[in-house]
Image (cartoon, rainbow, N blue to C red; front, top):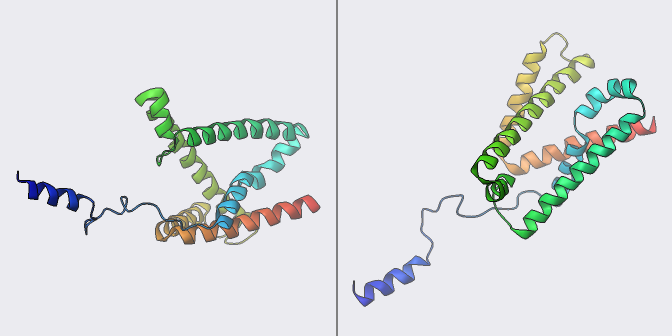
Amino acid sequence: MSEQSLKDEATSAGKPTAHVDAGDAGYSKSLKSRHVNMIAIGGAIGTGLFLGAGGRLADAGPSLFVAYAVCGVFAFLVVRALGELVLYRPSSGAFVSYAREFLGEKGAYVAGWMYFLNWATTGIADITAVAVYTHYWGMFSDIPQWVIALVALAVVLTVNLISVRMFGELEFWFAIIKVSALVVFMLI
């Protein structure tokens, strides 16, 4: 190879190509801090708090608060540990990349599938809760619950596929509704 062709290769290597993969372009910030904060608060409240806490509170009484507090402390400690890992070794991958690094391929495989099963089950439970809520308040009571759940799933899927900003905005307003309902329940 000639010296000129080596120089040409070296200078062209730093130039971006016209066909860059979207993943190579980097991440963009589409969510504002208000979105992220309210998504976190709304996720912490959860749908099950409204749907199942009444029955659990009647069965367990005040000890339910102790059980929630203990679980909350453990969840806090796990999130703190994950935060320490992120600060120690930043990674653009999910926490499964940390499981791969520290536990090996088998640990990452199990962690990834358990995470998927957790959110698949939680998602279906939330969609089912939407159908239960609509039937409880008398809206759409003549429509079967599975149809309402399917429509809710289609709406959530569509919003997630359209844009991150729209997802953040909807999650923000749904979290506002949850927080408002919780405040009203506390006052009553």
